[in-house]
Length: 534
Image (cartoon, rainbow, N blue to C red; front, side):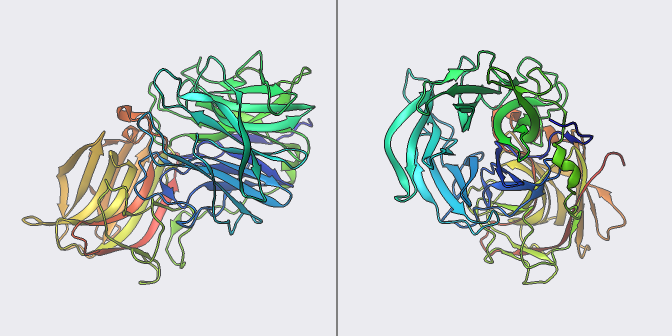
C-alpha cells in the first residue's frame, strides 16, 4: 500500500452506532448500523474517503417495513446487513420482539433499492431461526442467507451454530436445506456472520464473546461454501478482552471491505467507558482498522497485535476527496420534514402527533403516553455523540393538569432517564423541574423546582461534561436558573443497573398528556453544540 499523510481517527461514527455492516458500491462506501426501538429503522452513513461520513436517510420508513409498537427496549432492529450486487442494494435486518427469556421472537427480513437513498421495497420475510442475518452473493450469482441459530432448549447452548440456506430471488424466499457451517470457538457466543471470497477461499468473519468486555472478531475459511471451516490458528483477529484499561473497549463484530484501490479495511464495534467503569452513555460506536493479509492467507490488523488502533492510515485515494458540509448546530425547524439526524420512539412521525406545518418555524408535539410506554410516545430525539456538549431549546407550553408535561429529556430507556419538564401542579401552580428514573426507580427532584406561572416561554438547557449532567432554565434566554444538582449521566449506559441493554443516550424533545386530550407543546429550535472546554 502507498503511504498516505492522512489519518483516520476512531471512532469514525461516534455515539450509539453499533453492529456496523460495511459495503462498497464503486467508489462509494456505506456503513449500516443498528437502531433497535428507534424509528425510522437502520442508520446508513456514506463516505468517499473513509475519513468523513455523512448520515443518509434511514431506509425503513414505513410500518409495512418495520412495526416497533410494543417492542421491548433494546429489541427491534438488530445488526442490519447491507450488500450491493449488480446495481441493487440489499438490506437484511432482524426485528426482535422478545429478548429477556430463553425464547427470542425473531423476524428476519430483506428489502432492496436501486438507490441507497431509496425508495426501499416492501419487506420479504426470510426466517425466524436466529438473529444477525447476512446475504452473500457468490461469484456465480447464487445467493445465500446466513444467521446464527438461537437454541432455547434446556441443556443446550443458546448458540446453535452459524446456519446457511440458499435464497431464490425469483421466488423471493429461502429454498433448499439449512446447513450448519460453523460452531465457533471457545470464546463462545458466536454471531454476526460475514462471508466473502478471496484467493480461492470462502472466509467467514464472526463476532464472538458477546457484545461486552469479552467481545472479539474471529476469522475462519473453507475451500467450499458449505464448509468445513477452519478457524484461524491465531484467533481472534481483534479483541480488547485482555486489556480492560485500553481506550477502545468491547471491540468486535467486524465487517470487511476491499477498497477500489486494493486496501482492506474492517469496521467494528467499540465502546469508550468512563475510566474505572464499564459505563458509557454514548453507547457502542463504530471504528475502523486497516488490515493486511499474511502469506498463508490469514487476516491481521496492519499495526500488529489484537488491540484496535486509535488512529489508522487513510487510503491513498483519500487525498483527493473533501469533507461533507458540516451539520449546523442549530435547527430552527423551518423545513416541512424532520432532519434525518432525529428519530422517534417506536412509531413513525405522523401528523396525528407531530407537525412542522401547524405552526411554521416550530416543532409541535401533541402529548400522548408516558416515558414508560412501549407504544405511543411523543418524542423526537437525536444521539448523544460527544462527552462534552451543550443542548438547548425554547418551548412554548400551557399545561392545565399534572398529567400534562413537556420538555427536554436525556433518555436511555423507560428505566433510566432525566427529564427537564414543565407541568401544572394543583397547589403550587405551573412548575419547572427535573424528574429522573434510575434503574426503574422514579423520583421528582423538588428542591430546585421553579414556579413559572409568569413565564411566557421556557428556555431549556443541558450541559454535559464527561460524567456530569446539569440542567438550566430561563424565561428570556439571558437569565439562567440552575434546576438540577449534578447528575450522573453514566446511568444512561448499557450496563448500568445490570440491564445489559444495547443502545445509548438519546436527547429528546418530548410531550405527554396522560388524560388523552393530546395537549401540544411548541419547540422553536434545537441546539446541539459539542465543546472541548467552556
